[in-house]
Amino acid sequence: MYPELVDALRELGWLEVPACSRSGSAARTLSNARPSIQEVLSALLRAGFQRPQQSGLKVVRMEHPRLGEALFVKQSTSLESRLQAPLVLLPRYEERLQQILAIAGVERGSTSYYHNSNLRGFPKRRNGGEADIAYGIDLGFSHATALEQTLEYLLGAKTAVAVALPASQELVEAEVLDLSEQAHSDTERDALIKARIGQSGYRDDLLAYWGGCAVTDCCVPELLRASHIKPWRAASPAERLDPFNGLLLTPNLDLAFDRGLISFDDQGQILLGEDLNPDSARALNITPSLRLRQIEPQHRGYLAWHREHLFRK
Image 1 (tube, rainbow, N blue to C red):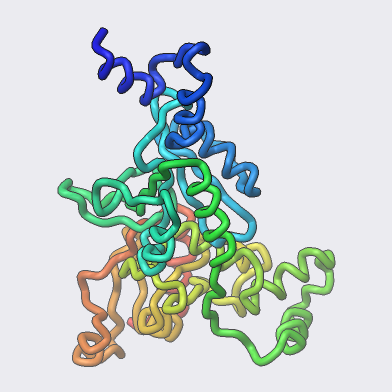
Image 2 (image 1 turned 180 degrees about the vertical axis):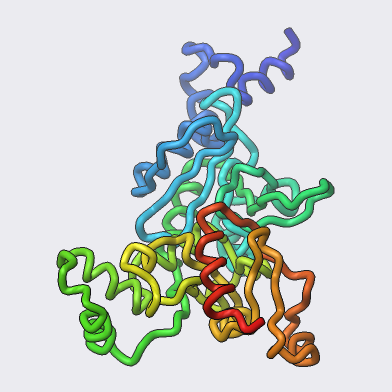
């Protein structure tokens, strides 16, 4: 077999590297080689990432309690494969990509974005097909140290996200108690209070699910608001913590939705209320063509409530 072909197959993980060749300079070459898929997954686990139970995916979802969103690792025919760009991040990391690429040994994938329908929770866009498809930024590493330093950067650079907060936690706690929730356990009551002031994983859940604005695909966290579809004041304790009762929206859409000036039908198509002046709607870039980027059956009950009780038809 041609030596070049052998080397290529070994790089893909389809051929074993003979043990005798792993000594001396060859061993040093392997230690400095691109990390394999297995090595990438192991590095993520060592950094505290967790792999949710899943099956049949072309990518592996990894989550970290300190990171507000998931990231993905590409799969291949072998865990020993050394892919050019195995790690996939949310598109919003574009704003910090220069800092990431400044890490020695880090490089971007060969295309602008990596597209895969299994990137659950990532934003979608059109990529030549008839339907939108999830996409992200794929990164490669020429050696294991580059991967480790990238993970350190990601975990250390997590930024606080802007949320509309009540005046004080005491005020919210009083509000929760006034809503006859004393019967709940302390743990559940604390979770509700934290959700109300934006300190729990609720916003993180919405960020992980939507990846950006549920309508416009804006991926700048500071410009996004986590909004309940069925408002806090009308929702049960379980509904207040249900991610399917939430939308991640830009401020103009969030305020219009909260005031009942817009809503969405069961297919996710936007509905414009009669009280929303057409000129004002255009000025806010709220047009009849807008729609939710994705919708699940669990959303529909909450959207129906919003249309019936809040939407100003």
